[in-house]
Image 1 (cartoon, rainbow, N blue to C red):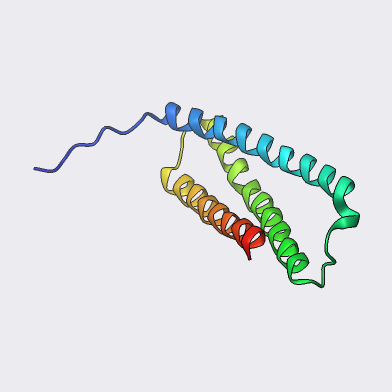
Image 2 (cartoon, helix red, strand yellow):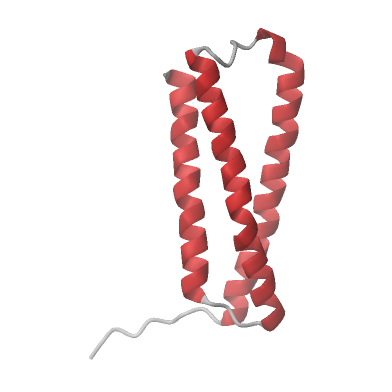
Length: 116
């Protein structure tokens, strides 16, 4: 006899995914706004892109841009599923797992940039 697991209903899964998407895109917007503001305020004092620090910064910025671009299909999938009220758990797991991997890489790059 196997262990029976209670799975959340489709509505709960989609509600959580929709809330996550709102929070995610608000956070990306905040990063862009603060990043542009910091570049405007401190850009002249930053090391050039050819320096080791500048190269690390470029790599991190490209990784954040990749995160935003790779998140668009995930958001569109959540919107489409919410319209039908039929989630596809395997697809959502793939999208959110991929997002987690990219975020961990970006966090590693941030530590590398700060301490490397």
